Image (cartoon, rainbow, N blue to C red; front, top):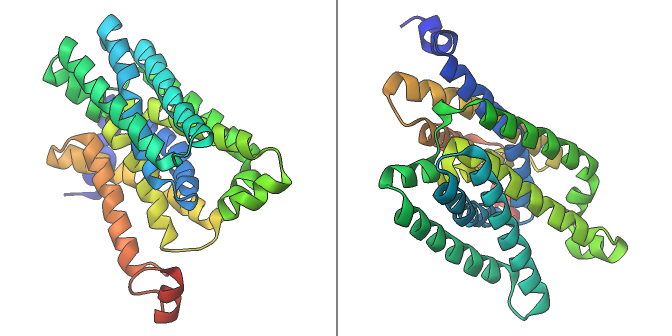
Amino acid sequence: MALYDLFIAPFADFAFMRRALLGAWLLSAAASPLGVFLMLRRMSLTGDAMAHAILPGAALGFMFFGLNLMPMTIGGLIAGLVVAFGAGAVARLTVQREDASLAAFYLISLALGVVLISAKGSSVDLMHVLFGSVLALDGGAMALIGGVSVVTLIVMGLLWRALVAECMDPLFFRSVSRLGGVVHFAFLGLVVLNLVAGFQALGSLMVVGLMMLPAAAGRFWSARVGVITALALGFGLISSVLGLLASYHWALPAGPAIILTAGLIYLISMVIGRRGLLGARPAARHRTA
């Protein structure tokens, strides 16, 4: 098979492939760098929890308006913010730690969302919400993903130093600055926004993969935040291209193909990365552990 047919023709011949690639790239541009800070703040599972938390809001939007982008997006955004701020408030006002309160909130949300969709729709509708439809992105979905990506990059640029400082030493940062709480909740808000924008393309179960896998892969190559962020962005973009090509040539579901490609990059980085299994010296590996 010629290189043109392998890499170029799917995007040159079909508009839906070009829209899918642009949507996945826009999502990668914001979600993958955001995943770096989730990982550095040891909140990797928070993204997964929040991805489940948006489900009941999207389900309510679906119940009243069908598979309509805006009501499902607004519903998912409200549900995600309620869970994020609710879990944070419980952690600050009670003896329960934030990871436990977040787990309780997201499990309730996930169960409620599945019940709502099952009560109103079919298994096909449930699969659409859970796994998305990146090959069927319309103008509204593209505008939403693009807008969220732009807002995320602007806010991350403005809060970059504060985000890095809170990752390195959150207690010290909060002791010298009153912005600790603001930065924390602004960051959670960005996570929710990206998950809501991404679930249209990759579904509520898959979207977090594009957020965390490129970031985790980048950690095997460098210890510097800026380098890890650049690598995560690159890995996200590459995963989008190769995943869509794999989906086209081998008739695979597009969203899972993108996440599997990101997973393959993660496994390769884990083995051959400078800080991976073969690259790390025994002493360095001991310190990392």
